[in-house]
Each structure stands twice: as C-alpha cells, then as structure tokens.
Length: 320
Image (cartoon, rainbow, N blue to C red):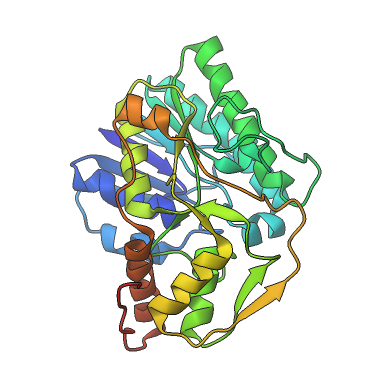
C-alpha cells in the first residue's frame, strides 16, 4: 500500500513509518515539525518508497499520487506540548482530522485515527473498556488534548456513517521507547533522563496513581493490525499490566544504577488516579496483545537515552 502518516516524524509516528516501510509499503510522512523531529526519520529518507513532506494538516492536505490508507497521528501529545499549544492541539483534532478524512474519502482509502486513553479522563470504571464514555473535565488543564481527541473520534464516526468512510479508531495508552523527547514531560522519559543525570526523580502525589506502559514496538504492531482489519473501533491498544508511578521510579533507579532519591511534588490537577486498558477487543478482533515486559522495554529506552547523551552505556542488569 501507499500510506499517508500524519505526524510521521514524531516519537510514535516515526516508528510506524519504519514498520510500514519494513513490510513493503510506501509511506508519505506529513509533519510540521512543531513537536516531531526531522532526526527521527533521517534514517528513512534514503529508503525506497519514503517521502517526507512538510505539512501543517490544520491548514490543508495536498498529497499527489495514489493513497491507499491514511493514519492520523498529528497532534501535540505530551502534557508539556499540549499545555503550551492548546489552540494548535484543538485544531489538529478538528480541522486536521477533517482534512485527512477528506483525503481518505477522495481516494477511497482506509483511515485510522490515533486517539488516546485520555478520552476516558479520570475513569469511573476499571479497567477501561471501549464502552466507557469517560469522565473528562472539558475546561481543565488537560482539556485541549482530551476534547480534541474526543471530537476527532466523533468526526471520524460521522464520516463513517454519513459518507461511508472506511475508518478505524485506536485508543492508545501510555507508550514509551526510543525517540521520546527528553523534555516532553512524559513520566518514562522524565524519570530516565533524571536518573541518567543523577538528579532526584520527581514523583507527583504519593506515587500510587497507576499507568499501563506499552513499549512502542508492541503499540505499532497494534496500529498496523488495525490498519489491515475492517474494524471500526474504538479499540484499546495498551499494556494491561498496571504499574504505580512509584514502582516505575524504583525500577528506573534499579536499571540505571542511579542513586536516587525520589522527590515528591504536588499532584497535578485532573491527573487520572488509575489507568489500565481492557484489551479483550484487540485480542479477539485483531489477534493483538503486547509482548515486551516493562523491564526489557525500559532497558532499550535507557540505552537510547544513554547513547543520545554520548555517555557510556550503564550496566543494565535484571531486576531482582
């Protein structure tokens, strides 16, 4: 296929472009490089079938030639980014989604939306299934991202029902791995960079809030499986192994050999207390589930950040 990937130079998008090329697809990567990095796809530029086109999807999308699929990942996705760029985040979820849906409809192409577990907000059910409507503050500090994705899901569904678009929706839970930005404000990258720099790890609240961390290779397999299916979704893609933030901090300290300690800070407003996906639908309909254990994924992520710092790679042992 020839696949258009918006946000293709971002952390997740660059891994998706790489996976699609690896299986023989052609890829047209669209990005305005506001939060993505050209370096993430620099190694792909000489690959046959790869093109990187500077494009702000909120202003319109022009792609020449055949289009067989559109995968929409373009959006500020980390707390630091969408707090700094709330209007751009909302525009990516609204106008950007509409422009890419129009592209898919014109070409009779499959459209896959990268949505998020943030649509569940601070969920009222646990674990979260796709039929949970969510518990979201529409005017809170996280609302630009949450509501942008909720609107994008509604718009994608409307295009399917009103215009016959072939669409799928993935609700992505916390994903981590190489090519995360050190300053993106996500908990894994923050902890790893603090540990490698010998600084205290910042744990918000009492650290008992939970997340479910999915290694990027596993997540990309799920996105590709959704692309190849006829499933409209939404479908949860994430790791059902729940982990407290404090346990994550302790594991990062163990794997890096950093001295610690942990520094406490006030819990941010509207920070979800528990987050864990029910992936029964993904297992049944896509034959997908994650395979990379958290400790192994963290080792790979630590190695990436160590290499990026230009420092000797730490002796990463197995947790006791």
